Structure formats: structure tokens, C-alpha cells
Length: 142
Length: 465
Image (tube, rainbow over all chains, first blue to last red; front, side, top):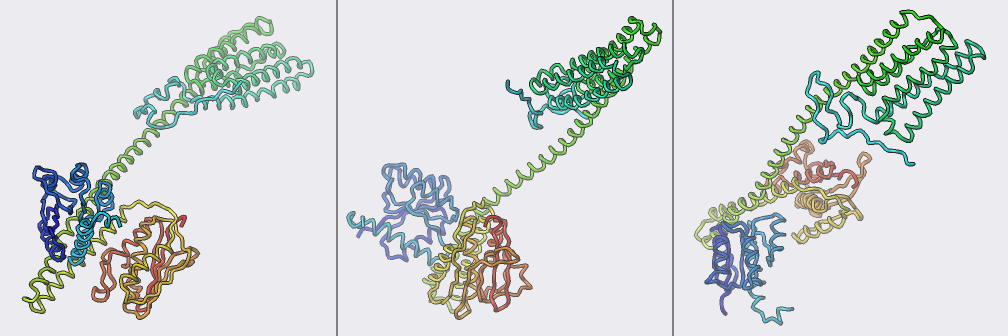
């Protein structure tokens, strides 16, 4: 089975490492690519040598181009319109959640402080977006 | 014909011309439609005209007195005087009723006509009574003109009245009632001076009282403007503070939590991957690092909630507290299936308030009860309504650890805790949040408790709840 490709858009090195560790804790066969700011993320998704990840994990507060702008551009482009994008944010503000969904985020997850819960969240997200996405379409409809 | 309506006095507002500077400057820049020397506004002048009608009625006894003094032979003169009074009263009444704007336009002329009318009446009475004369009668009209039209009115009506006096004497002399004497000339001059002096004094007093009012209003406006400016400054500052607070809350939510995630995450990874290379104490310390970071995470979450509650606007709507409490009780029970807690939630408890804030309120109160009954075998948590001092008050009651009422005043302060973290965990922000929600609804919250006998929290939600 081919590894699923995950693009993590995150500026905080600690969070990048924690996400990598959390992904390793889950038994999902994944490879992770990291973009450290919004511009890098756009380059990775819509640039000349664009990658096709199965899942994008997006932080909101990013240098250069913030997460909501990245989301807006991703949704505006034909190639990435249906790409599963999960917003991973520290924000508790309703406004961030509402705006994320309004711009077409597939899910909004608040990063928990407790690492065990974070692992759990990443695992569930992976199962939902990577395993379910790999199922044949007729089965997916159910 | 429809009655004319008159413009009301102009409202005091920004569109009014600026007031004159302090000092003796005349009140010359009042509303534009009012000439400089006119002190009264149209409605005031109409009201004065109505009052003047009553003054006019003082002439009514005059014909009666004439008949009383001189017998039935004076009847024609008395009837003439009565007719003159009735006519003058009548037409002014008609003008007031139907054509107030025409009356305002010709008000000064009306005073001259009044003089003329009195002159005509006096002519016949003079002829009848010989050399008796009643020249001071005209003063009434001079004063009236001074009141409504200031110096201009005094000038015009004094001339009319002075002429009436002189003509009255002249007529009597020409009719042969009395011989020509110099005193008739000096009397005429005296009356003219008298009219001008009294009328001028009235006009002067009117103008000065107007100036006093203007000066006081000017000073009052100055004070008001100062206060407004101060208020505006305060509001601007408050707004800036609020914006700062919001930015602060956002920063706290995002930036302060990130390092905590790293502390907790790497501690756990360390514990898992290198745990066997640490001794028991080392592992315990790492456990403490994790517990502390998680506690701080809760603290930040609770502080954020407090800040959000503080900033929130209360939107009042009907809220079913019973359903809300049942949902929260369900969540609490499912969170810890080992505990056997009886929730006794009264049916049909309704409130008017902000549904989101009331949910936070009940979550905190029921959550507290849940926490502080954790050492009871079969605890009971209650939601109900009770009449306290005649006011229906909601309450949440438990039979848990309770607290010493001596510390009740510390209950609602942020970071104030009545239990050590070893006894019951917590951040000490929950009740501060609850109190703020209650206050935002215009209500009151208070507690009743005893150590080991449980606690009851009563609250009201202000009007309409």
C-alpha cells in the first residue's frame, strides 16, 4: 500500500515535531511534508512543482500569508478545490472557526494541550480522511 | 379654512447659531426669523397677545362706572366704550384663532390701532365729562409694544400714544370745553416722555433678562461641552482598552498554549521512549511537568472564558434551564461512568437571558457541584427555583464538601480558591465567570454553605427572567 501524503502547514517547530510524533504513534502509513509559512504552502500546492497530498493540516496563524488566506487560495483553484483541508488551530475564538468553515475547511480541530489527546485527534483525522478516502466510491457513499 | 400652524421654537441643538460671547454684547444672533430687537419667539408673542386680551378686559368696568357716576344720560357713551372693548377683543381673538401669522406680522400696528380706539372712545367721554382726561391709559399699549418689539415698539407706539394725548387736548380746546393753557402742551410733552421712559425701561429689562439667559446658557453649554469631551475621551480610551484586551485574549489563546503543548508533548514522548532509562523519581518529575502544563492549559482556557464572557453582549431570549441542565448533567455523567450521582432537576425552569452565557453559567455551577461531591458515596445535585426575600431565585444545590461561610466574600474573585489543589483541582476562575454572567444579566448571586454539608448557589437574572 502506498503511503498517504500529508502536507502540514505550520510555523512552530515544536508543533511540527509533535505532529510528526503523533502521526508516528498512529499506525497510519503516512509521509509528511512541511510548509513553514503561507507562501511556502501555496508554492507546495499550486506552484510549478506542486505536490498532491491526500490531506492538508493547516495552522491559522502563519508568517507572510495567514492560514485563512491560504485556504481561500486553495479553494479558489480548480486543482485543489476538493482537497481535504483540516484546520489545526490553538484558537478558541468562534470567529476563527466560523470563518474557517465559511472558506471551505473540511474540519476544524483545536489543538489540545494534552499530547495523548492530540495523538487521538490525529489518529481519528487520519482514519477519516486517509482510510475513508481510499475506499471505493460506492462504499464511501454509505 | 384650516387653522394655521406655527413653527415651534427651534430645538436647542447643533444647528442653532453659536451663542454670543460673554459680556454685554446684545443678543443679536438668535434664530434668523427673529429681528434683532425682538426678544420673544412667535409662540411667546402669541401667548403674550392672549394675555393682553385679559388686560383689554380691564376696560369693561369703565362703561359701567360712567353710567354709575353720571346716570342714564351717560348710556350712549358707555355703550360706545363697551362696543369698542368688545370689537378690539373680538378681532384680536379672531386673528389669534384663524390668522396667527398675520397677527404676528401686524402685532405692533395692532398696538397703534389700540391707541386709536381708546382715543375715539375717550373723545366721546371727554365731550361728556368736560375736562376730565385719562391719558395714562395708553401706557398699557406702550408697555405691550416694548415687551414684544423692544425699542422699535416703544418708539412707534410712544409716538402714537403721545399724538393721541395731544390730539385729545386739542379736540377739547377746539370744542370749547376748556380754554387753551400752556399746561396742555407741557402735559403732552410730559406724557410723551413718560411713555418713552417706561417703555424704554421695559425694553431694557427684557433685553437684559434675555442676555442673562443667553449668558447662563452659554456657560452651561461650555460645561456640557467639557463634560462631553471628557466622556468622549473616556469612551475612546475604553474602546482602546477593549481592543487591547481582545488582542491580549487572542494572543493568550494562541501563543501561550503552543509552548504548553510542546512541554506536555515532549514530556510524554520522553516518558514513553526514554522512560526505562529514568528512575522512579525521574518519571514522577516528568509526570509533574505534564500535570503542571495541563493545569496551566486549563487556567488559560478558564481565563479566556472569563474574558469572553466579559466582552460578550447579552442577547435576551427565552431559555429552558431544565433542558440545559439535563444536557450538562448527561455530559458530566458520561464523563465518569463510575460515579453514582443523582441529579434532581426541576421541570419547567425557564429564564430570559443569553442562552450561550447561561450554558456557561450552568456548566460551571453544575461542574463545581460534580467536583465537590466527588468524595461522597451517593451525592445529590439539584437545580430549582426558590422564593428568597420575595424574589424568585434559581439555585444549584449539592451535598458535597461545602465551605466555611467565613470565606464567602472570596468566593467570586478570580484565582480565589477555598480548597487546596490536593483536595479538589481547579483554577479558581469558574465562579468569577459565573458572577460576571449574572451581573451582565443585571442579576445577583450569593451562596449558602457549611463545611461538609454541601453548598447552595442562588442567582437571579434581572428583569424579565
